[in-house]
Length: 224
Image 1 (cartoon, rainbow, N blue to C red):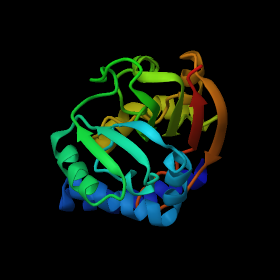
Image 2: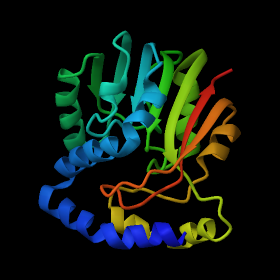
Image 3: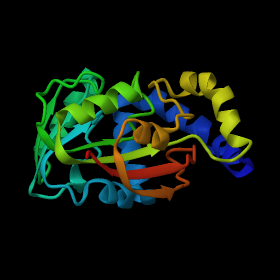
Image 4: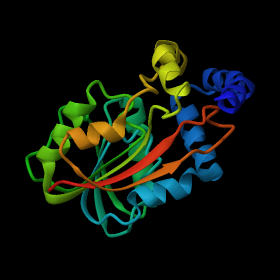
């Protein structure tokens, strides 16, 4: 907890300054490149690198995950923010994978039942209005036996850090300005939604581009 706090105090102000200078879209594009160089590229490969067939990605942002899909995946990526979606459309044009970018949000997916072989999200369930409703939508659009792939930061299991994340979450929401909550128990929420979790891998990466070293979980689950 002390290490994470000192890391944030050291790098946080410079990151906030850079965000103001670049604007949110350009900042997020640079942010993705920098954290990938610091280790997130391997995590994104772990997240989506084996997916094939019809894949839905929610909250695609500026398209940071696009380079990590297999060439034979057919990806439909949805993003509610107009500016982010425009950046993602440009990223899709340069991807080696077939990717369509559409407007939409996780809580109300604009697709028919049983439409996809897999659904994935990267650092998204922290910011949706209702993780439970979003996971219900995953179940609706997935075909039987469909795969779920999530890379999410979660509430710390540390006896002190966990409660502090709950107490300080309102301040964190004001700092990040993108609706990111840092205290959600996403693994438990996935289980409660009825998915069969296959694997959970734990990661923590210290990147100067991110400043916050969250506990990260990559969750691989299946819709029975």
